[in-house]
Length: 135
Image 1 (cartoon, helix red, strand yellow):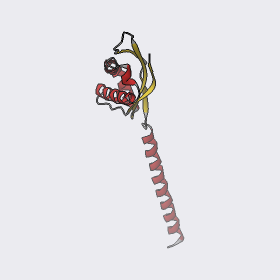
Image 2 (tube, rainbow, N blue to C red):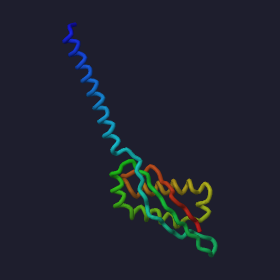
Image 3 (spheres, one colour):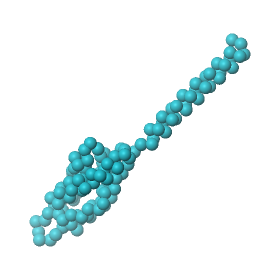
Image 4 (spheres, rainbow, N blue to C red):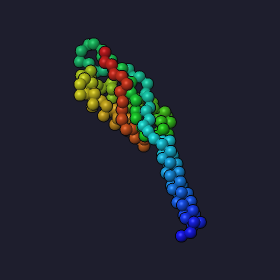
C-alpha cells in the first residue's frame, strides 16, 4: 500500500467515524426535546367531607399530574373541567378517616384512575400531592 492510499484510507475512516458520532448526537438531542417527565399543576380544591357527626369536615388538596409529553399538557388544559368534576365527585364521598394513614395510598390510586378515565386517550403516570389538609 502506497502513501497516498494510506492517507485516503485514514481520511475515509476519520470521515466515517465523524459522521457516525455526529448522527448519534443528533438523534440523542432530538429525543431529549420531548423527554419528560412533565407536571401539570391543578388548582387547589376544597371539598366538604362526609361526617357522622354534626361537625363539618373540610379537605383542601393540591395536586400535580405527571405526563410523558409536553404536548399532552395542552390537551389537559382543555379537559381540565372534566377532570376536576371527577375528582370533586369522588372526594365529596370520603370521610376524614378515609384519608388517614394508608388511606393516602388508596386516595392516590383512585385519583390517578379518575384522571386517566377523564383524559382518555392521555395517560397520566402519577398523581403527586403538593398539599393535603383535613380540618
